[in-house]
Amino acid sequence: MKRLYRCIKQLLLSVAETAHARLFDYMVRQGMILAAIALPNGSLVAIAASYGDAKTMSAVTNADPGVGTFAASHNLEINDIVEITSGWSRLTDKVVRLGAGGSPPANMFSLDGIDTTLTSIYPAGSGVGTVREILTWTQLSQILESTSSGGEQQFLDYQLLEADAAKRIPTFKSPAGLSFKVADDPTLAGYILASEANDDRLCRAVRLTLPSGAIIYYNAYISLNKTPSLTVNQIMAVEVTLSLLAEPVRYAAP
Image (cartoon, rainbow, N blue to C red; front, side, top):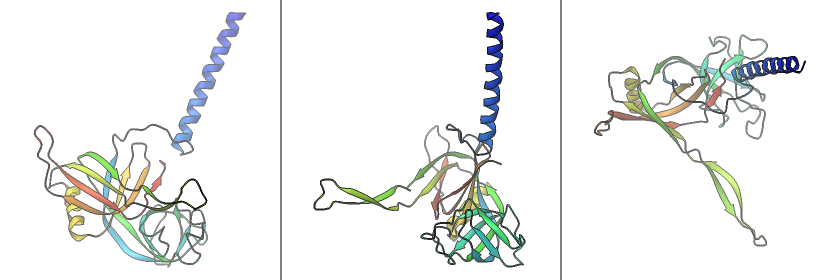
């Protein structure tokens, strides 16, 4: 009897563990739980290669997510990726995905992932502007390594006369950027596009697709150091630098 009890107990535990594991995997895929450890291996970086014409955004709601209103001739669709120019400094220059915006759906789209409810940051009625749809992307291939810089919070330290300890107030964040070391090959499409961006000094959207399927969108000025590194027994490489214009926008894997 005891042996039968142990077998039944072991079976129930095994079933429970399997069900728990499947539930956890499902929640990770849906973005309800973020896996704590991940490798960047297999990530893809792409630069916006072409844009549509600017479309007027005549209104943006204070909501989560904010909803923009567009003229009837916008030709935009749900899931389009757009670059935003807005009267709201926290929104302008961001690259976002359009979602279903309400009624009538033909000229209203949500700005997925953008919470505009805080009116002290997003004053009501001031978010109007334009959007440009990103039409095509070109992969920046042969990336050897990447580094990030900047974005550190700066502070104002102060001390009151009657206090025995100093305090600090957060002020601004330092300029942020990404750098990619890329194997030197000036014939690659990504190299050519980065070179064009370096020369024309126009901002470009950048898409980072992670192995999980999650996507991060940046908007940046792109610089290219065309002089390759020359180190014995190491791959010749050039450096592509992104000077970010706004905080990145991240979307979970579908």
